[in-house]
Length: 110
Image (tube, rainbow, N blue to C red):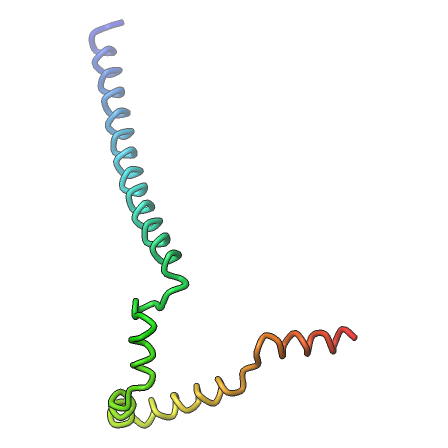
């Protein structure tokens, strides 16, 4: 082999190694992002049974029964927001329990 061909081969080898290292860097970044995403999912799954805001049962109960909060909501909501809240409350009242749905399905099967 001539000196020129050796230099070309070494140059190609260096370029290939450089590309592989860049690819490896990108893969490591991607792996780190996936690890962060998995960590967030694990935290989310662990908190699924809890309140999404992390409030204790006592605090939630206090908020539900708080007259100050109710008054603030009445005063500060826009008319559109109040109408939407009423719609949600009405829909919530029209929901069936799981037992009711199972009875309906059983009646249809018979």
